[in-house]
Image (cartoon, rainbow, N blue to C red; front, side, top):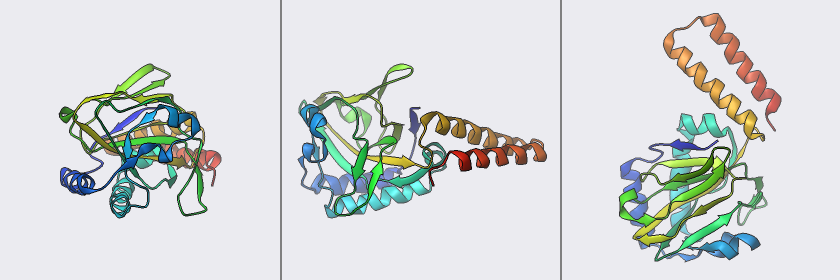
Amino acid sequence: MLLQIPDVLTQEQVTVARALLDEATFVDGRVTAGHQSARAKDNSQLPEDHPVARQLGEMILSALQRNPLFISAALPLRVFPPLFNSYSGGQSFGNHVDNAIRQVSGTPMRMRTDLSATLFLSDADSYDGGELQMEDTHGMQTVKLAAGDMVLYPATSLHQVTPITRGVRVACFFWVQSLVRDAGDRALLFDMDNAIQRLNQSGADESARRTLVGTYHNLLRKWSDT
């Protein structure tokens, strides 16, 4: 399931983030790539332990905790501390699949990457190229969103960032370990949660709604890893 989540950050938050990132020093993006991905990766990245990465990461994690669409779709157990990258001057990231396991730098915490996320921090009309392309069950999908919007997609997807031909593409990226490992099960729970919310707004029969809510939680209990 590929899901676009609008307005994860406000425009004021995007402005603050870009001001801090534009003043920070980026390094070769291959520092976080696996052996195979490093061959395809050509971008710049803010070091994981950079104070700006930590400051903005906390802001983004707080925004995600308040975003009901993200919570419903991802059912997050763990979220990798957000990272930040930049593409310019023909840079790109060729086709690759994200590493299955990530370790948080400086800690013993290891997590499974069920979902990948890209939060766009550049206005879409400020650069050409730089589209996120991925293959899913519906074929090739191309995503280029407004600053502050995010796309969530399976980490198992073969995906790439196309070459930048004008301007600079700045984004945040991270991974999520979900409470529910199976992507199909997560999609069913997401659809059921959306149906429950619509029924709540419609004033549908209360007894039926209680039954559906109970079924949702019993399935989550059955399928969750924790």
